Length: 115
Length: 111
Image (cartoon, rainbow over all chains, first blue to last red; front, side, top):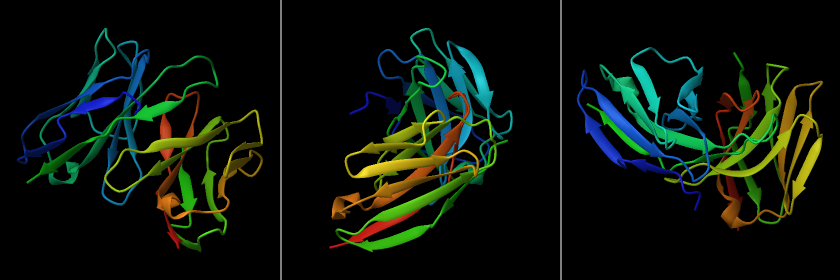
């Protein structure tokens, strides 16, 4: 077990609503990344937080936003939900020990369904 | 941005045979290449990774090779077992800030 946890496990929302997903990093990890995984697809990078600052962002609109807290836990917020936002949302934590040393471990994911 | 392509999308092998999955990447600056195994309904799990300063890495029945000149890397599984059946994803990253994933390979090992 990697130690990365996410909540909730499943969530059903209506189009136009807002949602907050939560992630607790593995102990000692200072970096959290969020991914969207549509059915049958690979994870798509949303953004990464390192020491509470956004450290990279994929090709997602501004209605996808995030936060990282001093204890390195993180939130993903999605506003104005669209049907295409239905997916598995994964967070992954890592600890960057050096320029080539940053293994990433995934949480179990939150399954979001937008109706 | 980085673009990672993965082939094949599905692969069936007989138990005991070898399986090879190939990925190409577009950004020559990418320097970290992990492979993940995802079983149905479960989280992706890191199974092996390779960094740009080495060309090959082995871990028991699993090996990964990297050709930086051609910008491709491959996963090799030898002596496959039914429990190897899963979806495998390759990924590429520059300094661990962003990870770009392939579209996945569904591996089936036939007993």
